[in-house]
Amino acid sequence: MPDDSRLTLAEFAYHRAVFADDRAGLPAAGRALDAVAADLALARGRLLHADFLDSGLADPREAELFAEAARCYAALGDRRGEGEALFWVGLVNQMIDQDDVAAAEVFDRALSLANETGDRLTASYILRHIGIGAHRAGQLDVARERLTESTRLRRELGFEDGAAANLVGLAYLAAQQDRRDDAARHLDEGDELASRHAAVAVSRQLAQARRNLGFEQSR
Image 1 (tube, rainbow, N blue to C red):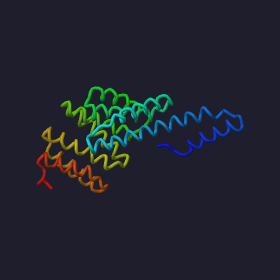
Image 2 (image 1 turned 30 degrees about the vertical axis):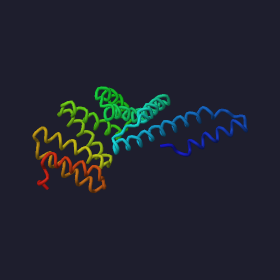
Image 3 (image 1 turned 45 degrees about the vertical axis):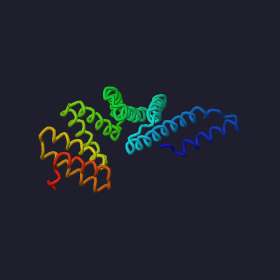
Image 4 (image 1 turned 45 degrees about the horizontal axis):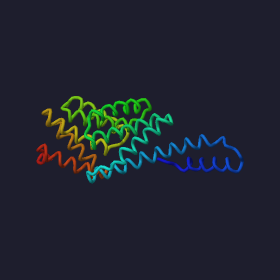
């Protein structure tokens, strides 16, 4: 996220250039503002994606903002930021454009950058959505592997509501693979985690999965 220190740096560089005829700080200040612009584009795109998840109506600015963020981070040499922005580019491909082929290509690049820079949180998101794509393609073993790895990372990071969200998909996969006991276990654990963190949206997804899979009476 943008921080005041980068804006302060730009203000200081301007003051030095105008009043002290010292332009040495202008390039660094410009790069700092480029980083602010990248952060803002990413943050605004995420807000638009939250609106999409609620309304189902896509805003074309979302894809533009994520692409802009990815370009800015790449130009700055910020490979961690580039990997995170590319994940969101791939998410638009997958969830809005319904283009799993394009999404998979972007996710592969994003995951490489996330792993390279040690960004385990972004890696957990990418693995989750690679798993979703594999599930939609009928590659159940691949989907299970990717979702399981994403869940492991989220547990390690203390991102338990995110782990609960993954357990929804793992429950569906288990049921499709005739692992009913595993499916029930995933749902029960997901309910516990979602309740602990007041993740009401995930709780609704788990309740829907329970109904769809015929586990209403298992609790």
